[in-house]
Length: 208
Image (cartoon, rainbow, N blue to C red; front, top):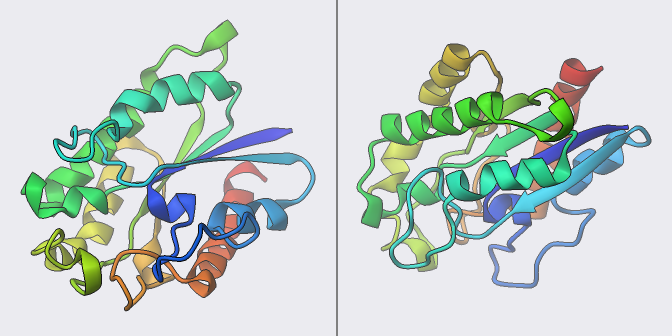
C-alpha cells in the first residue's frame, strides 16, 4: 500500500465557491485521485482553509503550513508521496509578499520534508509541488486579495524554478484548471475533477 498525503488549503479541503457545504469526498480533487488510483494506494486529505506556507496569519491564526507539516507527516508515516499545493492565501494583501517570495516559502517546506526525521528510520517521501492556478479579484474576497491576481500569474514559473532547485516533481495547476469566477479563489466541481485526473496521471508516473 502506497500512502499519499495531499497537503493544502481550502481548495484541497473542498470549499464550495458558492458558499454551499463542503464538496463531498468523491468531488474533491484528492477524492478523484483516490478513486482513479484504486486499490494499492491510500490518499490522505490534509486540507485546511486559510493555510499559508511559512507565515503566521495575524487575523485568522493557526494556519501556518510550516508549523503543522512535519507533525502531520510523522503521524502518517510511512508516506511515499506528499502532494503540496499552497500559496493562494499568501497572496492576501495583509502579507504584502511578492510571488517570488511565496514560491521560496514553498521551497522551505520541500526542504523540510526532505530533511525531517521520520519514525523508525523511514525515508523522506517524494514531493509533488503544484503551483496554484491564478486567482481573480472578484466577489467577497476581492478586497482581501487586492493585488493578488497579478502576482498569481507568476506562480507557474517561480514554482517550476523551486521544483528544479530542490529536485522535486512539479505541476502547474494553472495550465489545467481555473479558479471560479464566483469568488475568484476556489474551484468548481468540474475543475476539481480535471485536477484530480491530471494529478492521477502524474502520480502514476512518479510511483508507478
